[in-house]
Amino acid sequence: MKYATNQFIKRYGIKVTLRRWEYGQDAVTRTSHILIGRGRKKNTPMHLLQSLREGIFPADVDIDNGYFIEDAVRDETFMVCGMRPGYGKGGMISIAANLLLCNSRLELRRVQWTGDERGNLIFGFKQPEDWQLPCCIREVNHGLQQFDAGVLSETEYLVYTPRFFLMETDQIMLENGGKYQPYKVLFSDESAFPGMMVLQVARDTRK
Image (cartoon, rainbow, N blue to C red):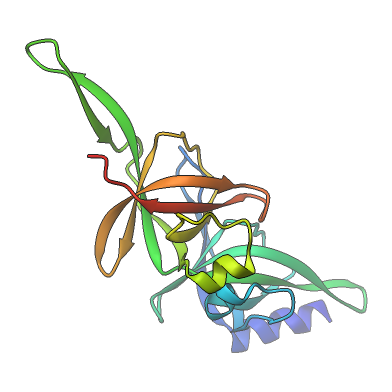
């Protein structure tokens, strides 16, 4: 049954690139086939329903939370945010994964103090790592704040991203409408999805 399931996914699924990203390391990539459908409504927060998909992988595919799934044909990138095995006769025959559709990119900026020729300290930001990380952002409105008491009143966006090293004074640049805008991190939750972070951010006026 496992072989039949693998052949079905390969025949009717789409070919994608799996990309494992870890902070400070080169990305590891490989290819696989996947069946993609709408995400399940059960136990899914309302604000994520539009971005959530379900992907069915062969049982022998090595994936984990925070992996990127890149569909070059449709020019879409998804992020794995949960998995469960599918069982049949003889054991596990597939892997069902919750996939968040990435609708933005993130750049990291870190505080840097430099000195001028007069010895004055000048405040600024630098990019410690040269990457633009795909992520899923959701705009915060009154309804979401009513639904989730953990969302701060100042929060403008929730950002779903693989976990990376983040300092309290860091600034992140989010792509929105083709432009990058600066945001400060109000809160970082690393417990909602293992291997990932959910950031609450608001516009940052620091320059």
